Length: 333
Ligand code: 5GP
Image 1 (cartoon, rainbow, N blue to C red):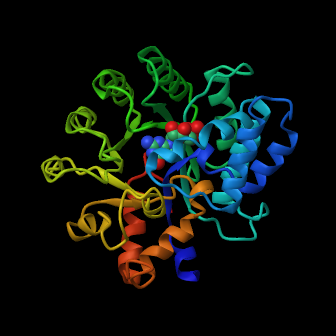
Image 2: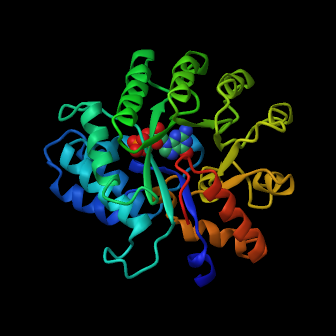
């Protein structure tokens, strides 16, 4: 643990609403108005999160989100959860007494408009919390959801660009959400605009067998800087990389195992990328349902098979270095 704690590490794939500490969820649930129609759904979801979520397939993950969103729909709640997530990664005991989980965090979230706030307000609240930390510790990636309409995607990208231009700490765009939905061809013009404005680009890609080759090709046509999961990239698609294009792979081991998108650590595509000396970064994805942490994910690299990948300390240090190098806001370490 001391070795892993001492490594400079970048967490580059963590979804805000999937990373809320369970303690914070319980506190928000206590304040939640019990007369609401969503009360049962919230209670059921909390029970699952407390006792350990069992997912039969990746799509089950998305059914957890409405209850979490019901608890984070006010400006106050968004500020509370953002603060708690930042603290869990960067300052676990709240007083700097315990080593942070990671040296640098690029937190991502989908701007949400609710009856209580606009998307702009949502992003402002999240950024206010992020910017309480130094620039070499925390930054924001704005996610667009595959289920969004064209005009919603456009609004989110415009907001991200405007905020970046105003000097706010927005460093990239992510495409996330249910892999079965959305036509990625229609997203590309917006993603290219974001890249043109100087934002980094990362996309969830080939995450499920339901993602078609056309879907992946549309996303790859924007030349993302990083690729999330990329579990089911065919050999044909793996050939996309070239001497001048080597996007970093965001690897989320626990997430893939629990969502059953990979059968075992031994069968995980991380082995392919390690063998081919392709850049990767180790990430948590959604620490709340997957009950993990940065240190937990790095422990999986070090532990002997079948519990882990059995990498040497030198290799783990090399992996951590690759992650730092893949940050959109090049952090110092
Ligand atoms: P938020 O963007 O609201 O802060 O974080 C939760 C959202 O992130 C989910 O509603 C979902 O759209 C997205 N998300 C979280 N984990 C995953 C994942 O493993 N795959 C995909 N495609 N999207 C995810």
